[in-house]
Image (cartoon, rainbow, N blue to C red; front, top):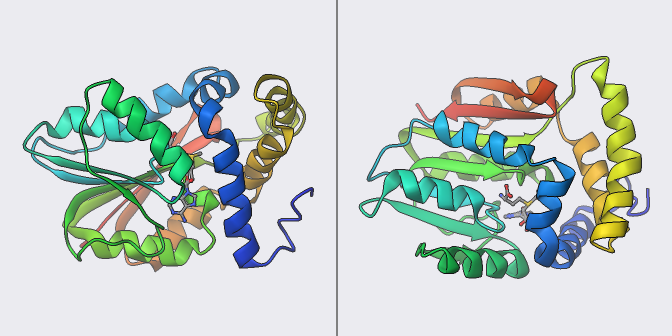
Length: 240
Ligand code: SAM
């Protein structure tokens, strides 16, 4: 692959991911709508709607990017609650911060790595990572950190690309390997970043593997829900 993801060292992966998100930050929202035909809005709404989060809860949005989930959770928890908008990438966090402020949403923000969260143990009622886990170098460490900061009874929500059901997987492969980079090239003038996106989707663990990884990290009652034939899946797990 052009990034040679199968052979790059772990350190290199983190810096390549950083380059990709510094590069796409400005066009991220529009590209999300174009490439998913607006479906990402429905997947995110489903996550929020089924989140079991209540007014007054404390939520951590990891890899929060331009802030879609932070905004949704803030509406649910209200002024008595707390939603932390966090990301490892300063460009993404800045676009998100400006957008949230423009929309009148004031939330604490933090530039931090999901693998080393600067939050105390047992603090949050809910942790959400939406389209972020696949970019993380050590997913096992990140999942353990998410577990650590959750209160007992708290819920982790992982919304992520997943494995598409047969026979639609063939059409999806053509879409993601041919059309996606082409759209990235024409619209965002950044074919490489969108090529990375397609590759990272293919290499991400499938539904059952991610479920196993969450159980391994300590989560209880792990379940998942396929969305749009498995293009994405919402995994949920609880801290006992
Ligand atoms: N959550 C947003 C959404 O659903 O639209 C943004 C998702 S965007 C595809 C992925 C985000 O993951 C990027 O903003 C990137 O900077 C962030 N990211 C990658 N590795 C990370 C890490 N180790 N810790 C925290 N964030 C990370």
